[in-house]
View (cartoon, rainbow, N blue to C red):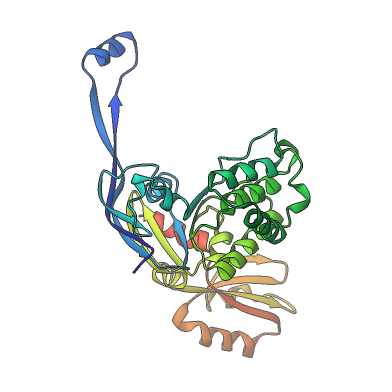
Length: 323
């Protein structure tokens, strides 16, 4: 059985229509009119235990609304959602002990207290015995490399350290499912890499299911084999990241470093020249022609290095969201 099952899930917000000016306000007071905004439009998917799934879409696509329905913060307008066999909106204690939600733009830690105090509050809320709390705290703090900062006030921590402490607080009860909404938002590259490494290790060690939204495609590529893409409230793709790239952009990128002169005009007959920087050239060629084009390059030119990659995920998604 899937650990998460969503079927024809919809969320419609009823929003009042109000014009500008005093007369419009007065009219609105006595005769309110509304319009419906359909944020999520009948999406269906399932997630198996232990999967790490990237939940992707542009701003306003319905990602956060969907996550909030999955954790029970918002009631669906219609459709069915089951998480660990529960109806999330019932907010049963047994259900809440098995999930966690981390939102990069919100915090649960108390600003003027050290993280350890908030962690003890969470342990009390989840009724975690003292010996179990200490064992979990020690292990998670070691994995996150944050133990030396847990006794400093939250306001004195860097943004990266605060996010690590937020994640630690969210995992102290060892949930089965992690819902992560932009967990690396605003972090520098080193902090992003550190959190990605932690999540990869946590998934492997604890078998936790992770649903991840992020605008940093490095997070998705580093952690997720599967992507669910929604656009304008509709699910438009559910599958392997490689399949998404192949479906949307049937090309490969060749990075070629030449020893001598770059034969630009000749290269344009081999593929689309996307970028030239120093002795390095980026070429775009059709996937079914990669081996032939690589052979031509190796036979004809003096090359220091050559690599073949998929187009950046940002470029693939931009192509998807054009429609």
